[in-house]
Image 1 (cartoon, each protein chain N blue to C red):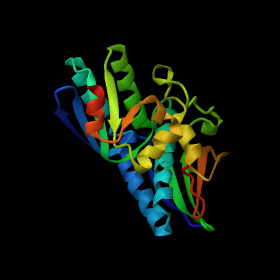
Image 2 (cartoon, each protein chain N blue to C red):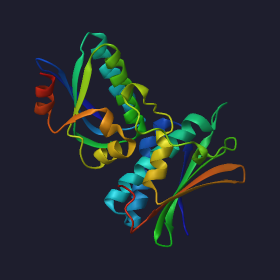
Image 3 (cartoon, chains in turn brown, blue):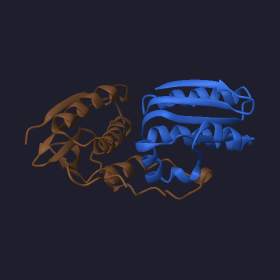
Image 4 (tube, each protein chain N blue to C red):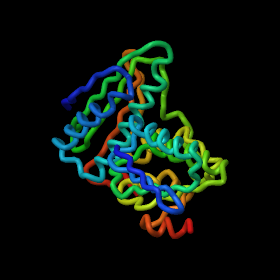
Length: 141
Length: 111
């Protein structure tokens, strides 16, 4: 398992660079177009979560590794903020009408919906979200 | 993301293309807020050229729609297609917005 890694300050302004990096990696792997779209949404949601919430006081980096693990494409997003499992957040109510609709939690919901498998671990002072995209199954409905 | 606006007789048509993400969505919200502040109440937002949308894009759409609703205005979407449509379906946003097949259909609906 060899990962290519992109490291940058946790700042939303770096999104384009990150997307270009991971997209190139997914293309080398040969991820199907539809699957890649889901990957890019899940990637943005995970990255933006780190940018907004990982470093409450001061600044820090985010490190994104991607590559093949067997026949699956794997992306890992790591930050050095306080221990927090973003996957512990509840799903939003996706049936509320316009005025009652809350946007909070939608990003995590997309991460869950658009990955084939997602997990969180705390390792060596880092929060690591691991997203797995398999060749075969389509994550989008 | 590029935003183009056209004033029709009964609404302002906002044509969005490219990516509506965490970097670009604030620009959409700012543009619409300016129109709303100047008194416009009816919008058709056309997604024909939109390739990508994330929760940040949905957040901006929702904020604008809520603001308009408090002012008695309305916002319709057109050409919500492909992968963008799937994001709408997964999030349930397909049911909280009025979505039409074309700009012409949306303008006709506003009347």
